Image 1 (cartoon, rainbow, N blue to C red):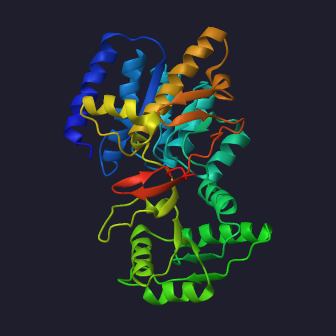
Image 2: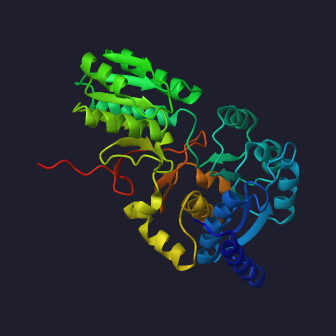
Length: 360
């Protein structure tokens, strides 16, 4: 867990370094510095600040209140500081007001958080310089569908969900895609969430002949269903969504349960070196830390490339592949990630990891 006091000390050192030598690319880091979102803001500031210091670029920290009509003031602060690119942006409220002014100043904004489909549509329509380093709306469903069609198409599939808006919409998207590909689930249902046991549900899955089940629900419900299936000696391969990234309590998740989710990048080979370097500075690489480090890395490299080529920085962001601690990252002409960041992961021991390669 990030310690806010430790982060504050770390960021003070970064600020002193930035004041002592303005150099390289000037990067704005927009994140909440106080209030209920301060912890997430600290993650953004720590990750981006670490990378900016390591690369010898210049950091300009801008507070983000996430209040309505606050974006224009954020944009003014970025323009006055003569930043070349800005990263962070936890809240859509900030971007809505900031983007028109950032367009006039030719300052690209890279958000690590905002997923709003409507905001991105507005950005494309108005030519706003918004780049999304967060998943696009629908990316989770697209990856779930890809995994099921690739790995489960020949097996009897069940689709169940917990009745929440997200669970229902995610599962419905999967069902529609299966039917478009000529596949019909052997069982579909909405279960009652938050129950201490789901024995009746797993018995119904068995009667239907299902061996694979996608669950549009939260982690604890998945843990209960997995436990009860095992107790009833019902072999089920279980796949969940990004809601599986939650505390492993009160019932621990069984090894082998899979999820399509955003990974903990510190647990992946490509993120290990950056994670170790952050820990050496007293920063745990959790939450937005590594994604924000990545956004700052991209901003710095794009700024350097733009200066060398004599091109606008925004042009260098499109179509370039950046090697980062979260893997290869690029942006399409629509300013979305060129690769879906959701991955198929498997719970083993104390975390979600890439599934082990099948033995030959």
